[in-house]
Amino acid sequence: MDPDDWSKVLLAAIPVVGAVAKLLRGAVQGRRGRLVSDAELLAKLPPDSAAYTRMLGHLDAEVARIIEEEDRKRRDLVGIVLGVALLAGAAALAVSAWHSDGDVSPFLWAAAAVVALLGTVGLVQDAIPRARDDAGRPIK
Image 1: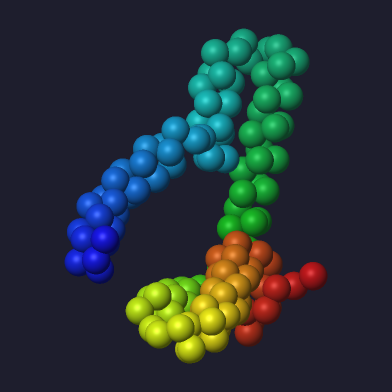
Image 2: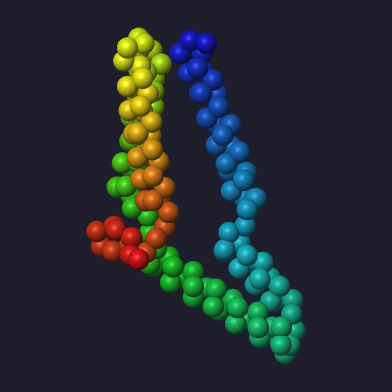
């Protein structure tokens, strides 16, 4: 396959991957989805039961925990952008290695692997919400 064919396949795959990701995201209930389910269950319980009291306490604690984590945890946007840029650079190096002659190709592949590893590590580290200081460094 020549690069033109690959670009057509890639352009066709992007919306498919996006649609699958959207479906999967909607299928998995997050914390707030579980809270809504728990609140609906709470509404069906008799107010004078012990289960009602326990569920109400659970909902209060879960809401307080979500608010506290959302205020404290955040992503490092600069690190995410740098990670994506490094991965794009690794892809460019891989394409160059693919199209280069045999003398330079191993060095380009090695450089692409190192840059991809650094980009992946940086992206994973900075994309995960964590408690961070003002400079964006994770608090231990």
